[in-house]
Image 1 (tube, rainbow, N blue to C red):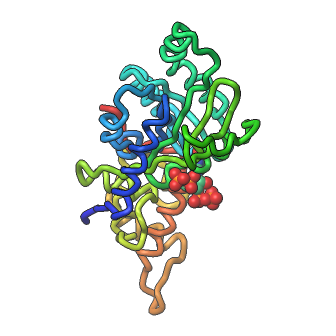
Image 2 (cartoon, rainbow, N blue to C red):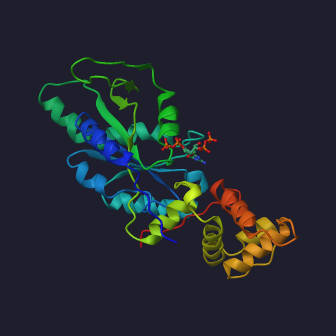
Image 3 (tube, protein in one colour):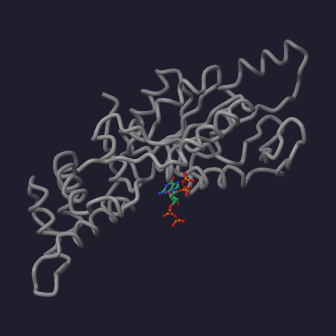
Length: 280
Ligand code: G4P
């Protein structure tokens, strides 16, 4: 299966983001904690030269906690400020403000030396579709006292959310496109449900997922579906189909339906909390 995804509107989104980047001091980049590498577009690094950087490992509630800690340490060693968050429940969201301030410490200091005081740092959220940008902005903005509204001249047409005296957030996120460096990146993005399902083959994804889980998290599928584990994804899908009575009209097993169940359960964290890739 070939995974490809580069909708035309991404070009426009990139141009818009380059404009917005001129207005801000710090980039808050959301990645999916289940696939921190595959959900991160490396092009942002060249677009973001000179900006302070914060990475949020979002959807941490769905990821393997121990592996999330390793990813956090990995990105910190690369010089990022990293926060683990669950934007849906707001867990960890409070810590983001602190990370933003730390990331901008140098700039705040520079301003102070020039006699500029209390100029808020300006932040922008970026990330690939479905990574949780809107959810995070909503969670973050809940604490916001006011939306600052348009500021003619400086921020024409832009809405800023003022979190406090020291941080303002651009309320429209920058959309990055996933970068398909190799097919495994595409596969992982498909597995977490960030590519339109209609262009994908459910059965094949289900097969790949079963293979991954039996290898990396043995026992997870058998615990969820009450079936014996087998390292062959096809056999697993057949067993799930039987266990869940996924049958076609003539009584034949409906493997596609079973694959759909497994994928949905995985994406919603109902099989467990898993991370699909590691830094190494
Ligand atoms: P985007 O702006 O980056 O495109 O993403 P968006 O916020 O729309 O979030 C995409 C989906 O991810 C939403 O689910 C949202 O609820 C979910 N989500 C965001 N952050 C988290 C998180 O930290 N943990 C979990 N478990 N889910 C998260 P949806 O099914 O599209 O909508 P809904 O049914 O949840 O409203």
